[in-house]
Length: 133
Image 1 (tube, helix red, strand yellow):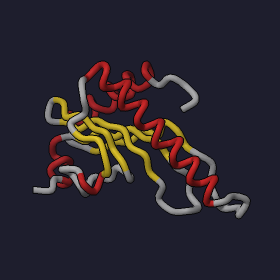
Image 2 (tube, rainbow, N blue to C red; image 1 turned 60 degrees about the vertical axis):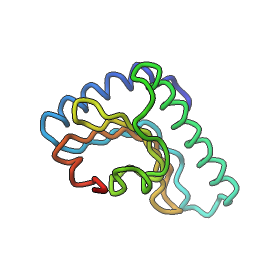
Image 3 (cartoon, rainbow, N blue to C red; image 1 turned 135 degrees about the vertical axis):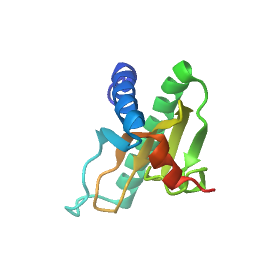
């Protein structure tokens, strides 16, 4: 992560959460995007290193949020979370506040596409759709 997202994160989370929770909607904000891999000028080792950097950024960002909000309600693989259908990439850290889910995740949708680090805010109505129960 090339910059300290603490202030930006706080502002984005407040803006996204207010709008999302009020509407019961789902919102995303991309914080970081890696290069794309269309050109064939990359190796799997390079892609693995980028993935590990993005995972480390997720962990650092989750730790920054935890300093202000406490430990996340969940951090780990999205598919193993209480909300396995949440469109939150491969790994997520989230906090449940005022019936809303607010979190960060990393994603990589296909081998040619970039890795991303993103915020997610999910209001109560939308959150019910993603619950495992």
